[in-house]
Length: 267
Length: 267
Image (tube, rainbow over all chains, first blue to last red; front, top):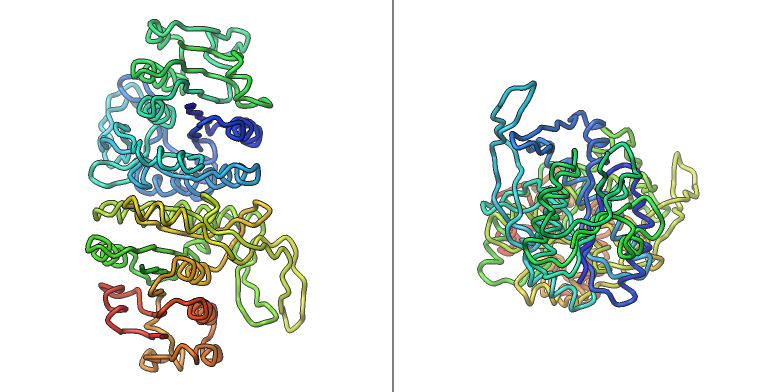
């Protein structure tokens, strides 16, 4: 059982990811693909006159401020454009892919925050009306049912709050929770960098291995969006996932390369 | 087994449809909801600088010319915005809704046309690069699997061509094929009119009943988008569906009213 998360940043080669995912699925690997759509959401939101707003929480994590108008654009891109593009590419490659957001069949449920404590211009602020939350429960029965019948789930945020509202959740951490609750041997997080870098400006500074027990020590090394990925990895490892791999999605055969050790391995 | 199609035209009260669908599902009705998103697609397409283009085929049916750029916007609205809005509303009402496009699990497959024969300015023209087609096969096993496990499928175009491409298909006719292949007793088509009208400008001219054998005679009465609905109805009846109802989706309890006979009944 493999959970593969592919990011939504610029530069990612989704066709190469789908080629490689298809190769592994057709060879018999039980696989769940989780994806993002962040960059394209920014592009569409700008065009629709609702420019993205990123905020930094008091604990130092960056996230998208998601009011209801932003949530609708988020859903259009993640669930409409990106999810269906991936499902179409996998179907054309012989994989019976089936796209699901966290809303569908209550696949991903959790707590909505509603209020964000952020730092803006050096000051602490409370932001209300935010549709963001954290995935706590995965509908494991639904994923098992689909996998058992030959479907490959392609999963995307948003998730569903316990009150029945759609909410933006971080894709990396959602993938981590899925990997835990599906008892995956391995979580592969593909993005537009080769892995965790000591120096974010130097791709040669790749960290090859991190002992599972030391993963939290590396939170300080990670910057920007990578912080969320390392947090997700530490949660997955704590939850019993055997290994987490960070690897590059801008190259041919990105999954095969990741599994062969060309990235950062946490185990 | 009930298949309910709700259109995507302006004026439709989706919250009222979801209230009523939830009431029937929670009372034990096996139900599949199919939806459109035409009006909202026009709005978003205009904003994104890809204005919609409608064409009339040589056989007199109007459809959206769907090049690849239009198809992506179509997917954003149908699969992202509208499908997830409906799934969220049903989840909040206690229904375990699960959204599927025709691509997902190869739910709806068929032939892509590619080339359209249209009439423009009184002249016949061939339009190429069109991603439009016709649903022929429904993945009945997938719908049965989901229904048997307590999920309510919320289905939307596009469908998948036999070559593995996404293609725009008419939602009413897709619903008709689903009703046939799922052996539904009844197909309910809700839109922004009270039913089939003798005079499209007079809502008092509602036709109450049409004998199944005579449905094709009424093709001449139907105008605009209603022609496709009557065609879908005639296909459903020919395929063994017991009854097709056309009814109003701008009122409270639209499904209950339709089933009580407040519309056009073809049986």
